[in-house]
Image 1 (cartoon, one colour):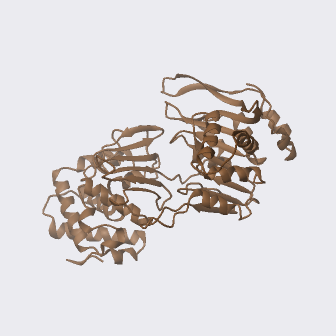
Image 2 (cartoon, one colour):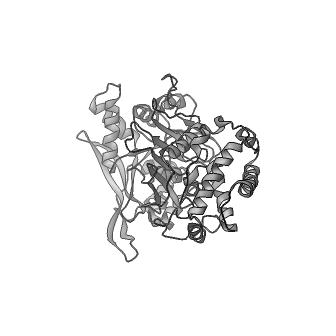
Image 3 (cartoon, helix red, strand yellow):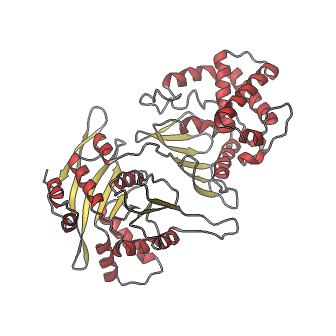
Length: 480
């Protein structure tokens, strides 16, 4: 597994031996100096005192020792054998090998703390994702954005900040990118310089490399949330009012067709997850996504994910293919992770033909913009339909549009809930049921404001009555 001059099977991690190393420099010690605003979870090893202590350990002697250690590990390691072991056993073997190399090969004075740090960073480089491994393990980091090997940004608590993490070189960064995409069965090279994939832990990974990226590899990682939020969590975080929470709970129970609208990073998928918590356990639900992120808790869920074309340009499976197939699988509801193309045609058809309670997300700045975008997407497809017929189909299919936004204090809030109330003189008739009226920032930098209920009675009260929820819904719609 580790032996002097032992051969290295480089195919396990999808990279060449000499590409993996590169001095990680500040990876653990200074990772979040500029970004840290709050305490880390004490249950993890990513605590503030660890970061600050580690920074002091990474002097010139430490960095020289690290480079020598990494080179020796790569020369001696047999990754084929390592892959056969469990995670903790692999870590122990690497630690043992590090101790042996430090004693035999590294003639640099190191303290016990520096030796322990060297071992942990060696594990991150060989088994994890190098410099960003510490960020992948931080529960408060939601997004990791890499702009070349010298710049790593994160989003934490809704705020984007530059960290002090650096990759050793562009080659080092590229090797980490290639490692990630090889693990998930994708490829990235000059002939295919873009990739969008789901990482083993469920995080969404997107990368673009030169020649399309002019200043080095560009990487975006949307981290997978292990703990699913429910609607009550939104109340606790002041993202919705208690009145809105009760209303949306009923909307999920009475099988309304719902579209969640918002910008990039506004929390659409997380809200979709929360709304799905109100689906009855007896319903058969099909989810369709580009990169699977939804975490439905019901027992009867069928998850499907698109597939890109292979190296020959064949074998692509689009969302439209999956929606069409889902209609043959006797679903009670279809949940579409993101409406972005001609799959909208089949989704509208499903909503209009007995699949009530279907949901999806879309990129738009307001509920009315969301409906207009749906109309435009159908218009850009190969389907030939008159404007009047199309609008009638959309008005019949969609009951509710929920607008969510990441506001300038970094918090995500539901800013508007609108009913699609049909057509009036050929135009969509929409009425606002709830809205958020923002105020000034308080002394903690938090946006003040008030959630407002208009008191308007929606047309889907009849559907609420069918499910025995009419009185409850009316109670949630009292003006505020």
